[in-house]
Length: 120
Image (cartoon, rainbow, N blue to C red; front, side, top):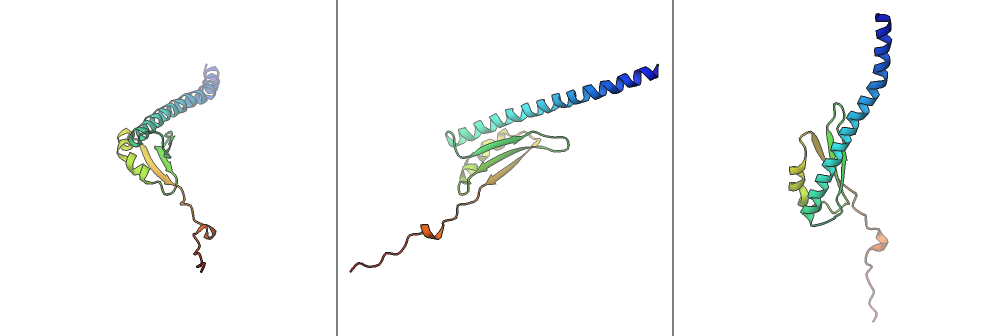
């Protein structure tokens, strides 16, 4: 009897475990999309429309919290500061907030204003 049940259980686990894992991951990703929609709406509301703030959400994984990533170009960090209070209110407790700012553009020497010589 055990000779028949053991292989059936083993094959059942091989088939059902990946399906269960995929269902769990899909639910996590669906929740992350819902969090992203709420955070993006909060940013738009705080700044009065679309802005240069990019919102990305990474779903939680086993032994790791989810992440909300706010990205802005260099020099535009004040946008995150304006939206900060509303974003924090919408954050789930099991997510962490990451703020990334791009590099500030360097002004090449050729673009600097040159001193003009006197004409007379």
